[in-house]
Figure 1 (tube, helix red, strand yellow):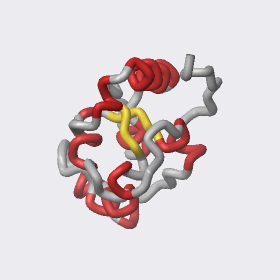
Figure 2 (tube, helix red, strand yellow; figure 1 turned 90 degrees about the horizontal axis):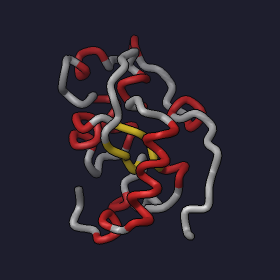
Figure 3 (cartoon, helix red, strand yellow; figure 1 turned 60 degrees about the vertical axis):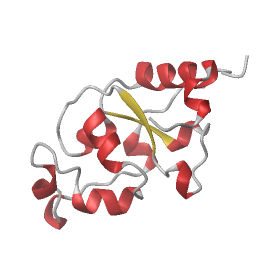
Length: 116
């Protein structure tokens, strides 16, 4: 986790819990045909690269291996190499690529007001 104080806020804790409750499996592992529990929430477009911190459409449930290996790498660049754990790097070649469009990353959510 970053030193960003927003990660320690109650607003982030509520948002993180909502994302993980909505989809408890890692979106990146799921795209590779694996079922891995999501224990973290990833900013698809890293905030360090202009991604919006609070935008639910910029958040994906992720296992720790995927999230920490992706870090601030752009999604398409990271997917090209895979996370490097459990053989993903060799699995993720041009022959096996699948779409990670917004509709594939996450199920539609029932947005709740997290500002209150």
